[in-house]
Each structure stands twice: as structure tokens, then as C-alpha cells.
Amino acid sequence: MKTFWIVKQEPDNYPFEQLVADKRTDWTGVRNYQARNLLRRMQIGDVIFYYHSGKDKCVYGIARVTKSAFPDPTDTDWVAVEIEAVRKLVSSVSLARIKENPALANLQLLKQSRLSVSEVSEAEFNEIIRMAGDDFRG
Image 1 (cartoon, rainbow, N blue to C red):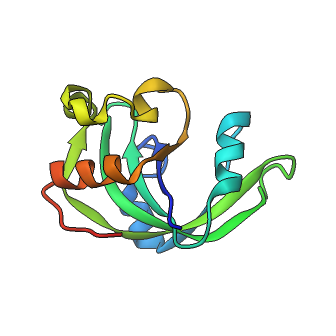
Image 2: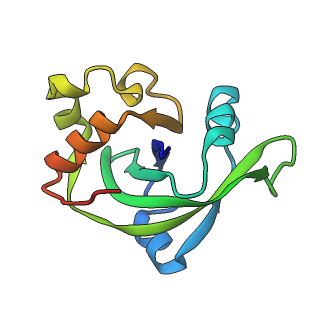
Image 3: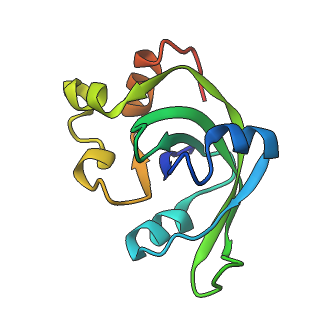
């Protein structure tokens, strides 16, 4: 069964456009135990929203897990996953719009805003896709 996720990144550090140019990257540097445990649950084919944190604060693009958890090459006490770019959303979805939507009231991104990785239910995923004016089906 496919699981949906959000990963957060400062666009000044690694914007979605860079992932598109690179095609794939190792998602490294996660140093939070809860986020690490979520990375360990990611499976090949899981769909990811790429969230620009910092000044942008929006769901910006879609990626996919291409390699499940392996030792993080930047610190092997932690784990990483490999992700690939799928595409930019038709329209980004701002954090402000997400907060205004009652269908997203339980989104883990809102409940635990400091986590760099969070799970998204299928209904939440579909609602964000709808808000983006997109037709992506995962």
C-alpha cells in the first residue's frame, strides 16, 4: 500500500528546481528521532510532497521514493532515503491556505511543524492536490 509524505526543505538550501535538475538525490541530514523513524517507514514508490519551508512556506512539488532507508552517508548513525522529482505542482499551496482548510486540520505538518518529514493521509494528499488545481493521481 502506497503511503504519502511531506518533506521540508529551505529553498535556499535545496529548492525543488534543483531536485528536478538532479533528477534524484539522497535525502540526508535528518537528525530528529521521530523523523528518522518516519524515513525508515518510507517504501519505494511512496509519493512525497516537497515543501519549501522558510520564507516560501508552501507545498511546491511532487517527488517519489526510489530507495528505502539506508545509512545516511553524512552520519551512518542516521538514515536517508533516495527520492526523485516527479513534477512541480500546477500551483503551489501555501501554509496559510492549508491552515484555512478544515479538511487539513489534522495534517501532521500543522500538528508537529518542526518535523522535516511527516506522513499525509490519502484524503489529505488528495485535498492538497485539489487545492493546487492539479490532477496528479499518485
